[in-house]
Image (tube, rainbow, N blue to C red):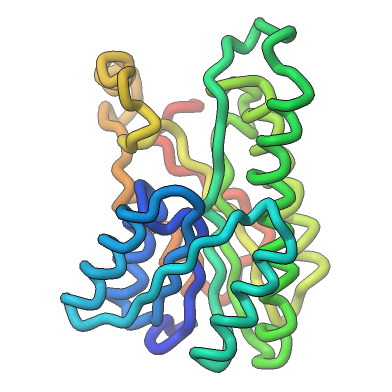
Length: 246
């Protein structure tokens, strides 16, 4: 897919990997919709950067766990730009809970993570499908994690939610073919604000990776764009982790 002039929705698009992806898509000529839930200033700054550099972007505040809000957002995008061609399902949350502390993984934690990380991605995919089907072309990239492959992450519910995203990717690839491609990019540790307060831990991790470096948001964004552009690939879980899980 040539991303030039394509309308791209990036959830959680104001910070970290989301911001890097928004900027990368804009550089490829896409019209960018930066979705956010809480990071208003970050989302607005991302839009300003894109527009100042000659691109086209807007920000929309929506909680992806709320299906009605998602459908309304997608309708607004289609009304303003005519369609939606690309979806990057990046919005995700976690709770930092020791993996062995099962009691701390309460129903509230499970529900919150699943509502955003899994159902939120499904809500967004379901909402954009009619427009992509009408165009007979579309591409979706979900953001998974190596936690979904290893079972180890910031918390047990987080790791399980990411495994569910990997499964969702494969199921949607079956459901939406041949018009719409659905893939998943699964990063390992990435130097984002998720490491805030744990920077020393991140520095200690880097020398133990095969490539001895922590991937940057820009690294992940480049892979996301390449995945969107690749027209002969669907249903794949692609890791980017500097060899972390090897």
